[in-house]
Image 1: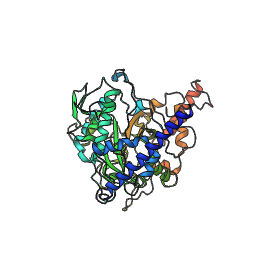
Image 2 (image 1 turned 90 degrees about the horizontal axis):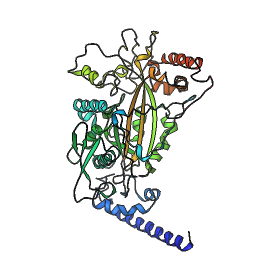
Image 3 (image 1 turned 90 degrees about the vertical axis):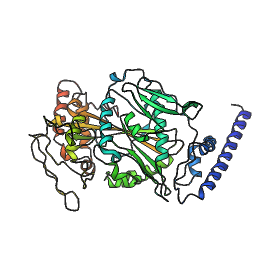
Image 4 (image 1 turned 180 degrees about the vertical axis):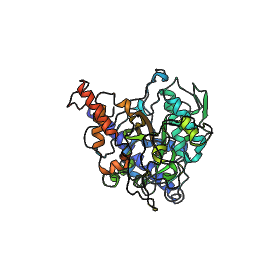
Length: 481
């Protein structure tokens, strides 16, 4: 590069930075009069966005330095072009995530860069998930899907971010999976991806179900379009991120109603997340504050779930039996391990309240009147490995460019442990990982409910070694697979 070219580009960069600073100052002054009643409010998608688009000339770090907590300067951002998936979705198997390692379990954020093609994963289980989510939305309503209003002086509402999100999602899905989704765009409009018209409706082609993005609840639409749960975090005037919108239809063991409106740290602290205060609190807060729009991330985690076999003659019309007919492996809610989802005293530390099978019983844990867990006792009846599932989550985090909200996606995968035990090296690695849990992690993951599975995994590992399927000292791990 010649000196002249360098100076020319350097001059343009300085000019752009100066313009950004002026625009940022102007935006802050215009907002100051309304800050008390519109704390953390999101800018609309027209005038403010056009003004903020110029700010894309600066680095995200400079933008963050210029804005006050709870404010966001909209960013002009074109999502990287995605490659269309050409495979028939009915032939696409779920990705076999195995996010556990040999040895000690370390509590970290565990984030990795997310390739643009991999924001949302769709596979042959889509139609089963769609049926479960539809049932959950119908029966639970705003206990499963809800957008929070503004908390004056603290944080803005989640409505604008939810609306932006469903348009981003529809754009991605229609371009990534063109055989599954068909979008209809507005005419004489260029606010969609790559200068196209904004999406008005999107149709799930095999089901012939069409959703209007302007008329229907954005998070209900988002839930029915994919196999994911979603939360949207909005920055407050105190710099913390608040859960201001959520579509939580497949949580397994937590409820949206208990967490909606909470800041990030309280969500984790009230959920008794092990080592959060000592190892995750500060780093997670910084990460959320600094997350740029062009650097989405992904992480995986895992736990276990014991599922009681469904009754042979279930009443499929009402109540829990109706849910069991739609969701026999308790994907949406772990009834076997956590009892009724509607129990007034439900907490994350709730424990098994029923039998796992006629011949396999776990004793109830006893709770004090204050709701605190006391001594847990377990019968010595061996646990049937057929009732245990590995439950993994693939989570992504992505910043929305116009509102600044952070979208948290959660895709749940269930795999029978007896199936895992047939995979090369997996039973030994899984048993080693579980034994590497700290006492706090073991309590959080309810190890007492299924710890007998370790003996089964050890046996399967020994058989793999004996047959030469794996070597005795082999430590294969292609995390998170």
